[in-house]
Length: 374
Image 1 (cartoon, helix red, strand yellow):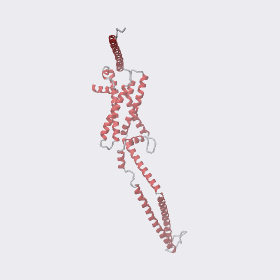
Image 2 (tube, rainbow, N blue to C red):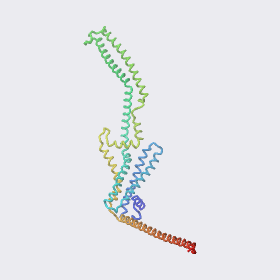
Image 3 (cartoon, helix red, strand yellow):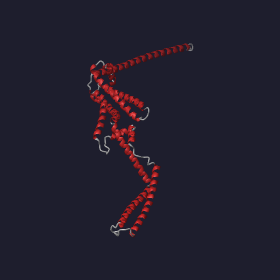
Image 4 (cartoon, rainbow, N blue to C red):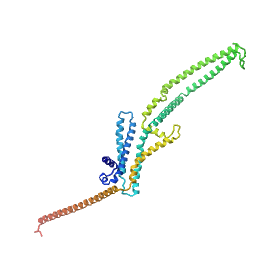
C-alpha cells in the first residue's frame, strides 16, 4: 500500500521527501495522483482504440494501436502532471485562478479528445446501424445519378422509345375495344355501332380484317420496341449501370464493420438526429453528458488543487523554494566577490610586472647613455 501511495504521489507531481513529513496532506495528493493516473489510462485506451480503427484490416493494427495508445496515454499523463504541479498555492486566489485558466482550457480540450473514441465504442451498435442507412442511401443516390446521366446522354433514344410505347398502349387499347365491338356484332348485341343481328356478316368480317391489320402493326411496333430496349440495355451494360446494385444486408454489415474513424465519428454526430431529420433528444443528451463526464474528470485534478486550502506541504515547498532562491542569490554574490578579488589580483600583478619592465628599460637606457658628451 505504501508503494502504491508513493506511486500516486509521483503522479501528482508532489515532492515525495517533503510530503512524507506531513501525513495530513498525503491523502489529498494520493487522490490527485490517482485521478491523473486514470486520466492517462483512459487516454491510452481511447487513443489505442482510435488508432486501431485507423489501421483496421492491417496485420499490424493491434501493434500500432498498443504503441500509439501507450505514447498518447504517457503524453496526456505527463501534461496533466505538469498542469497540476505548476499551480502555485502560495500565490493569491486571483493569481491562482489566472494561472489555472489556460490549464483548465487545455484540460477541456484534452477531455474532449479522450472522450470521443470512448463514445464511439459505447454507441458502437447504433453507429453501425446509422452507417448502414447512410451507405444504402448513398448507393441509391449513386444509382439514381448514373441513371439520370444515362438518360440525358441518350435522350433522343429514350424519347423515341417512350413514343413507341405510348403508340403501343394506344394500339392495344384500340384493338381491345374493336375486339369487343366484333363480339357484340357476332352475338347480336345492339349498340350504336352494331346491327344487333346475330351472325358473322359483312360488318363483322370488315371489323375482323381491321383488327388483324392493327395487330400486325402492333407486332411490328413491339419488335421495334424490343430492339430499342435491347440497344439501351447494351449501352447500360457498356456504361456499367448493371454493375451498380443496392447493397445486400451482408455487404452492409461488412461495410459498417470496416468503417474508418472519420465515418464512425460522423455517424456519432448523426445519432443526435433521427433518420427523418428531427432531433433525437435522448441520444443527444446521452452523448453530451458522456463527453462532459470525461471533460470534468480531466479538469478534476486542477479543481481539487485550486479548491484545497493551503496546507503544511504547500508552506514547506514554498519555504524550500524561498531558501533555494536565497541560496542561489548568495552563490551569485559569492561568485561576484571572487571574480572581483581575482580581477584585483590580476590588476595588481599586471601593474607590478609592467613597473618592473619600465624600470629595467630605464636601467638599460642609462647604461647606454654617453656621459662624456655632456
